[in-house]
Length: 132
Image (cartoon, rainbow, N blue to C red; front, side):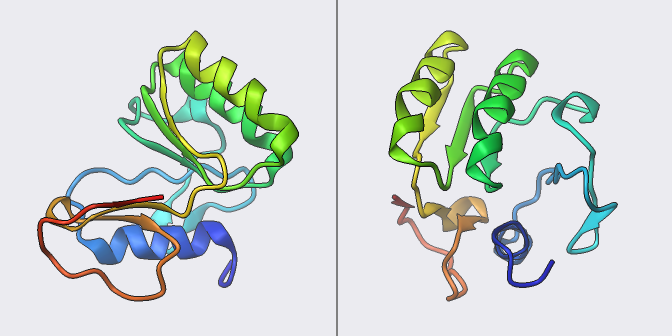
């Protein structure tokens, strides 16, 4: 849905020019920004190198666990209440997963074509990364 976190993140990922697969997961929609969506992590055709969790905080832990079971080794959690931090950290450690966040603004790596952020400004190619 336009205006929602997932839509903005997906728009930025697509506009960044990343050449690899982008696989949105949502049980609510068949596509996100015109890209076919999958109903859950288990149905993905491949294991993601990076997962960006931008859903309601109550689903963060279950999603992170499903990603860990799937073999994903890096995740960004965009929002989460402070009382969830320890559980998310423990889950990430259980799967030897690198975790950015929670409460992250995302990741910008222009030379890779990655704009996994909430930045309203288009990124320009260069050798600078922004990690929040």
